[in-house]
Length: 305
Image 1 (cartoon, one colour):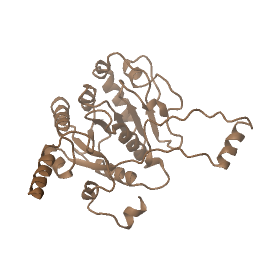
Image 2: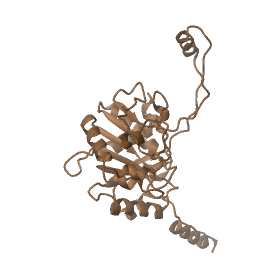
Image 3: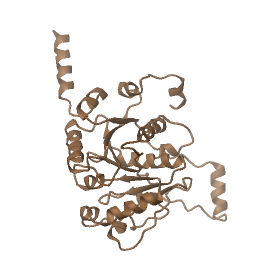
């Protein structure tokens, strides 16, 4: 009797769970392709400087005391820039391969990255995807289109209010900033300015003009947008994109939120631009992670662990 009651409770809990737990239920309910699955990223832990690095900094400062700024947690982790291979980097390369398949006769060049709600990892996916595309030699522009909560300006050579909002307003031409010295093909358009009416700026005639300029100057344009459900910005941006990546967080994003987000993008956006889902923050030892890739370890998995 105890086993029977326990099985019933377990089955009922699984049926009524509101968040995404299984790839099978995700693919069954979506009606849109699952383009990739990304593992959880290890938390960033700053390491102490080596003696040689301290001496190098002292020499750069002409022997004076080090002017070390207070440690600040980066808003976006960048595991694809690490020298050592990682499971996250290999999974992101699989996503890049899926995106490289021609859709409608051409490879998508304007990639919109969004999510249902906040804290689902869309900015992390956008920045790492842009860096990965740039590593192949393509010229890539990463646009921080989240004008309500901008964060990517921290990666520029200097923090400035001049960004996407100023470019849309047409007050003056804003050159993209180069965020990472080791990535010469990656440029960033981001600023700290928060305009009063972001949706009106996105719906203006200046938006298609900017996209025309970017597509002539870059091979890929990756746009990090606000989440879909709280504001309408992402739906407006989807009309100008070749593909929309919808980032859902494993065991956090609810089924209802995912359904409503896809309906908003398909009904209010441009139906010609496909929508694909990326399941983010999946535990590396979970069954869902290995279920997607079809293996449970081996020498290749150990090399990038």
